Length: 346
Image 1: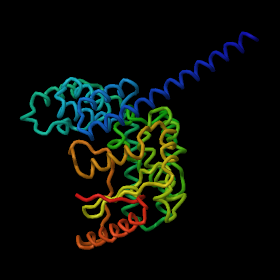
Image 2: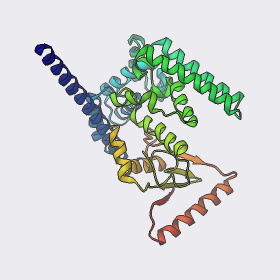
Image 3: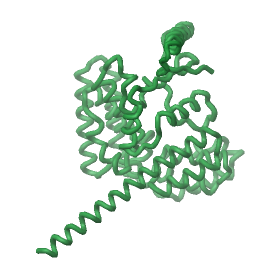
Image 4: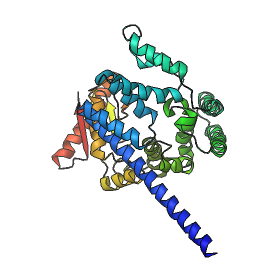
């Protein structure tokens, strides 16, 4: 009996150590990805290439990072071999025509030929039945919104059924990830839209994907956006929401009106950064701000590390007026020593 207890204790310790090592590798992955993106924002492309390599050595990369590393190595560093390594993993998960990876199939005939050879010989890892199920969920999600956009009961009903379908898919496949379902942004629309829309009915995305976030099979950056939308728009729909945030990754913190970028820094900045760290994201508010400004000034057409939401108030004159009014408010706040809101113009 004593021997059995000893064996169990050893097993528990071994599993705990394995989990700790895995979590450390996921954390290092996001750290190196963040450093790569900041290096690109500062036009230090060689450094960025090194950080991408380090990130991919730590943890299975997400397609969004592979695409950026591909663009960096192919178009900026002329490191064809490294670019093809990225393309190989993407092709395993994505059936998109390879023409999207080159600008001109004639002028770039050599690269195109190598990509085509990869596409012709690479076995995909995705499960077609899983992809088809997610596509059906997306189709149901979009159809009900086209046909019954004002009927909350009908929307809630379809979203609830789709949520059940997704939970059953998790039971069947163990996980929905980019290896078995394909590129999240291109092949997992059914999952993403259901997580987003069910937040309207106070269903927390955490219930479905949190465990995958923690084991590194669901992108923590996407989770932060979805969870932020749920917490700030549904659980706490107050006027003060831009200043008290959870991850501070929603449109309330970075918006564009006409040609003006408006930023709102949350009051609980330390808490926000701690929340991000809890899901392994090392990107601080200041890092995020750097990436927002990089995207706003369009410093590189190949890299957009932050989503910018544009707001429209009617005709161009209306947009200009709305932007001017907000700028005037912020100017007054600055005169009073309040710098929580700032703006930038092109």
